[in-house]
Length: 276
Length: 243
Image 1 (tube, rainbow over the protein chains, first blue to last red):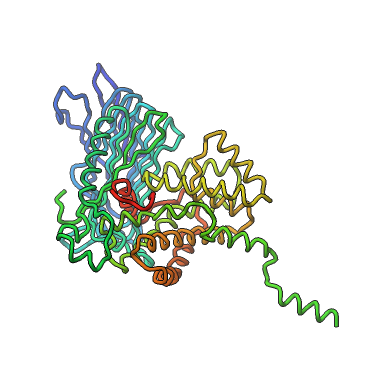
Image 2: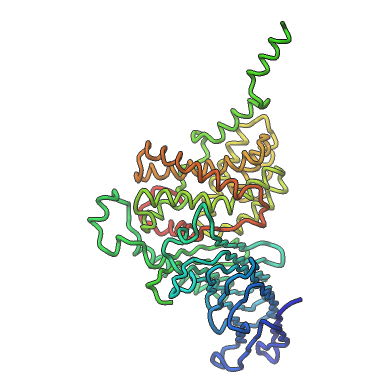
C-alpha cells in the first residue's frame, strides 16, 4: 500500500494535480503560487511528520506526470534519518512515470543520516524518448557540529531510469556501509557531501552542454599536470596545489545517442569549507 | 608390489585432475596476454593529478578502494556470467552493466578491455569454437558492447573454471593492472610495487570473499569518490593512460 500518490495532467492547458493522496508519515504540500505565473509547473513539497525519518519508517510514493506537464518535487528541509532502533532500516521509495514531452524536476534537500542510522532509498523513473528529468540525489556526512562524520551504519541509494518501461538507461546504486576492511570515513577522504545530478531530455540540451563545459573548466584549473616526485612536489607547489580540491566533479554522458537522449551525471564531493 | 607402486604414483599426483586447465588459468592471468589492460589506470592517474593521492600510503589506500569498488560493482557480473556462460546471459549482463557504468571514462575502459579479451580468447582458446561463434554473432548484431566483467566471466565459465576461481582471478587482474599503472606513473618502483601487491593480497582476498557469489541486482558502488575521480580523467592535459 502506497504512502502517497500524485497524478499530474494537463487541464485547460496547464499542468494540474488531478489526484493527490498521502498518509502518515508522509504529507504533500502543493502551494499554488511558487514560480512565476508564466511558467507552467506544479510544485510539490514532500514532508514527513516530525521532520525526519524514524527507524522502521517505510514511505513509498507514486508519481504520474502526464504528457506535456512539468512538475517539481522537493522538500522543506534536509531529510534527517534518525538512529536505527534494533537494527531496523528506514526506507523511502519513489516510482515516477514521466510522460511524453514532460519534465520532472526532483530537487530535494540532502539526506543527513544520524549516527547508527540505517536507510535505503530507491527511485525508479520510467521515461519516454522525449521525456525530461532533472534529478538531484545528495547526502551529507551527518551532524557535523555533533562530530558525526560518516557515522551512520548503512545508507543505500538506488536511482534507476528505464526507457519505454523496460530498457535500462541508467542504473546507479551507491552503498555506504560501515566496514571493517575499508572504513567508510576513509573512503570519503575528508569530503563531507556527495551529490549526483542527472540531466536527461531534449529540453535540457543547452543546460547539459553548459554544465559539461563548466565542470571541465573548473576541474582543469585544479589539475596538477604530470606529477613530479612527491618529495620535490611539496616544496615547489603553491599552497593551493598542495591539497586536494575542495570540490571534485566530473560529468559524463550516458545513453545511446541514437535515441536522442543526452544525459549527464555529475558527481560532486565538497569538503566542509564549501558552503552549500 | 605393483599395487604399492600404483598407490605411490597416485599419492604424488596433485588432487586436481584438470592440470591443462591450470595452464589456461595462468595464461589468462599473465600480464603478457595482449588484452590491453595496461592502457588503463583505474583512475589512478586522475587521482594523482587531483592530489587525492599524495604519497605511498595514499597509494596503498587507493588500491584497496579500487578493489572494494570492483568487488561490489563488478564481481556479481563475473559470477553470473561464469555460472551461465551463454550468449543470452551475456547480452543481458552487458546491457545492464552499460547502464551501471555511468562514468564515461570507466565505461569506455570496460568496453575496450572486454573487446580485446574476447578477441584474444576466441583466437587463443580454439578448442572452444563457441567463443569465436559468439564473438562473430555479437559483432554482426551490434547488440553487445563487450563489457569486461561479463566477458571475463564468460571466458572463465567456458574454459571450465570454478566460479570462485573466476571471481578471484578478476580481482587479481584488477590489482595487477593498477599496481602496474603505479609503476609506469613512476610513483613507486618495480620492487616496491611488487611488495605493495603482496601486502594488499590479504585485503584483496577478504574483499573477494565479501563480494563473491552475488546476483547482479546486488551490484553497487561502495567508493563513489573513485567514480568521480576517474571521471575527471578526460580533463587531464597530459596523460599516459586512457583511463
